[in-house]
Every structure is written in structure tokens, then in C-alpha cells.
Length: 446
Ligand code: MV4
Image (tube, rainbow, N blue to C red):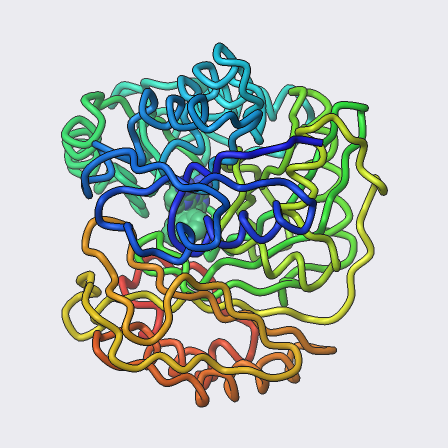
């Protein structure tokens, strides 16, 4: 096991990782910008290294500074958390070159999965279902028209260089293809400096269901079931739950089997998440492999009893997974993201001081946060303030527990997503379990 690990992140996830390290008897070294001088992750760590000014580009994203912090503090490994450098293959290489174990997948695997078109091709080769469409990047308008005719409408135009929905257009009729091709290409060019597009059959309505995996260095692959993440706004997840209300036992087994097969085919290591689109007929298609720990990992932890962060550290240290195959699961977990954003102002970030913060407590309630009353949320980073996660025996009970938790939550000082989350939990659409990513409507409530 490692002696000392650098936590290359901030906020709630840095706190989460430091706790896991301490439970393993491993020392934790924090990094922080000048804006995070008094932050909880700095207080909880055994040592802290200041790595730069508030802007992430000059601190948490500076590979040289982060690696230097690990070196000078005598760390033997680095946990990247999510965001920042967590999926940066150059950072993984910089760690390796400095004899630091990167707690995540190897650089080459990360790089290949970061290329969406290549990732899709590798999955297809591994026998994982992918959405039918023009394979490879760069379909001309004529090629897109031919592909669309073959696939049948609706189709999606996607940016070869992109992700996150930028440069993506839903085309429902032949006549719309030419104008939408032009706007999608322009948007992709502006966002990625590359206007090339490809065509996919549109899965509508689609649900976003993802499979959590853990892989060790001894051919061990563990799948930990799914998370349903269809409740999103502009590709920002708001609510996640497990199990998915839409997945049959057969589809779940097939999805986990596909993810495990893919892990072996690509030589995956550590924690990862396979994103799938689930169609209304129960068919599913790979879209992306997230080569990192995800925000919503606690949902899986509550249903499996497995500490994913602890397992990440253990497998990175060369230890084998205690169990492989499919992790047994029970009950139902729901997570909501409390963001410092103003739902009344188009979800504009609302940094500032929390004059009141009283999180809910009680059986089956977990709060992952870095804030407490009086803490100031800096304007430089993401707006996630806290994750409220509940577990109960079944979905109705878990919903009731989350509603109680949201009713108990008191937060004042900055506008947050709390009212919206209460509205979602009370909505007929959420309670029915029959929601989707319905991307025709900007607002899922319509
Ligand atoms: C799709 C799709 C339907 N059909 N592809 C959006 C972001 C990108 N990573 C993939 N996305 C989608 N691709 C096909 N062929 C619907 C979406 C989609 C979506 C996917 C996951 C989570 C939320 C979403 C919201 C809108 C659209």
C-alpha cells in the first residue's frame, strides 16, 4: 500500500478521497489555490501545498505544479478525482515519468477512450452494441444525406471532435438536413476548431444508463450495476438513481456483460463508467467510457456496500479485487446535486457566502460536501456545493426519504438548485420512473 497520496483536486471530492485514504492508513497531501486557503480539504489533509492563484488554469490544471507538489511532499501516488486533470493523458504520463502511481487507467487507454470515434470503433470490435451510423469521423453533406437515407430519420449529427452535445443536431426530416448540417458544422468548428460531423440513428426517447466497473492488475473485473442519469439540464446531471426504473434484469445483465467484455478487450484498469443510451424498446448502445471516478459514484456505493474510492486506491497499489464478476446489490439509492446556481437566472453560477447551511441527517442519508455554515463558495470552480444521497429498501421509500431530506435541508445566502430538486422529486414524471433525456425540450418539465 502507498505511504502518502497527493489528492489533485478540491471541493467535496477532495474531502471524499482524503477520508478514504485515512481509512486505509495512508497519508493525504492536499493541493490548493490561494482561493482555497481555508478549505475543508486543506484542513483534513496531513499536509497541504499551495500551487497557484485562484484560476484553475494556473493552479489545479497546471500539470507541472501538481507533479512538483507530489514530488516535494514525498508522495508515491496521485488521485485525480473528477474534472481538472482526471482525464488528461499528458498528466498521467507526467506522473509515470516522475515515479508517481496515477490512480486511474493507463495513459494510452485514457487517450483512446477520449477519442469518441475511436472509442466507438474499439467497442464495436469488442462486440459491444454501438448506435448504427456513419463510422469514423468526417461525413460530407452528401455522405450524411446518404447515411441518413439508409438509417432512416430521425438521425443525429454529431461533432467528430466533440462531446457534451456541442455541435449535435436532431434531424427529423430530409429537408432539415442541409441547414442543420451547416449550423452543426459551424458550432463544432467554433467549439473544437474542427467542423467535421458524423451521423447516427437517433435513439428517441433515450435514457442515459451507465455501468460502473472496477478492474485490477490481475485480470479481475467487477461490475457494480447501473446508474440512471436521464434527469439532466444542458448535459448537467441533476438527479441520479440506482437501479434504473427502466432496466429489465435481462438488459442489466447484458449491459454489465458488455462492459466487462469491453474492459478485457481494451485492457482497462481502475474505476470506469460505461455510458449507454437505452432505447424505448430496451435496446442499448455504448456512447462513452468515462475513465475516472464520477460525481454520482455514491449511488453505487450505497447499493453495493463497496467503497469505490478505497478500491481505486487498493487496485492502483497492485492489490487484487476481493470479489469479481457482478457485485450483489440491494435497495434503491438516489442522489441529487445541490449547486450554487440560480434557477431563476438561467442557472447562472451563484457563488458567495452560505449564511445558513443545515444539511439533513438521519438513517439512510449521506451528505458529501466541503461546505458548512459561513463558508464562501469561490467563483472560480464548479458550482457543486453538496450531494445529498439516500438509500432505502425500494424506490418509493427512497423517494420519500429524499423528500424528507430536501425538506430538512436549510441553505441560505446564495440561490441554489434546492427548490428545483424538491420540484423534481414531487413531479409525476419522476415518480412514475418514466422520464427520459427528452432533448427536444430544453426544460425536462415541459
Ligand atoms: C445520442 C442521443 C440519441 N441518439 N445519440 C448527448 C451528449 C453526447 N455525449 C451523447 N448525447 C446523446 N446522444 C443518439 N444516437 C441522445 C443524446 C442525449 C443525451 C445523452 C445522454 C444524456 C443526456 C442526453 C441529453 C440529450 C441528448
